[in-house]
Image 1 (cartoon, rainbow, N blue to C red):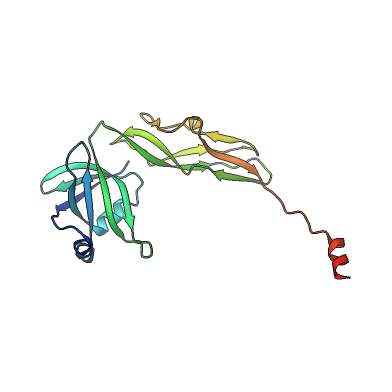
Image 2 (cartoon, rainbow, N blue to C red):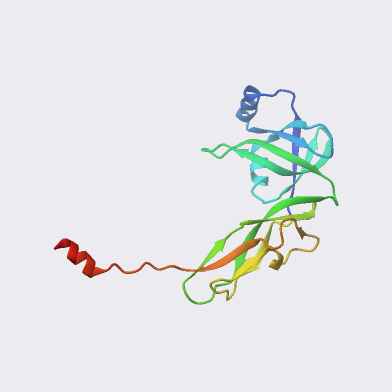
Length: 194
């Protein structure tokens, strides 16, 4: 799990105009909430935040005017065309606290010989983990699986201290037989031409 320290500034201006001014300064408007407190509106440095968010489930150590708080990204809004950050929602967490997060499912190994397709029914798993020990991803072996085989959520080995937060019988991966196209019937084509 990656932890990144970022200096934040409190903000008192709200609305589209204020958000545009903040973005012109290469900063990102954000809100921090959690633990039953009032939401705190802050501004974060755009480049540092962009780099931090490249790591899945990054833990941010926010320095808000001398006060340090831990937070994880809960919602990230990006510009649909240019991809720059428009707004970020952060959830306050404490060391030892359990949180529900989504982790990516990676596969390793090769399917059984033959024409098979691997379908990712779920590309992420919702798990419960300690806020300071969130796994970035889980790895699943697909070595030797044949058509018709499936891997359920309960079949995936999770890191220590991490538990499933979804139905354990949910299908995560399944192997399908590749369908081939039937060759066109040449005699039918010739009769239509005549």
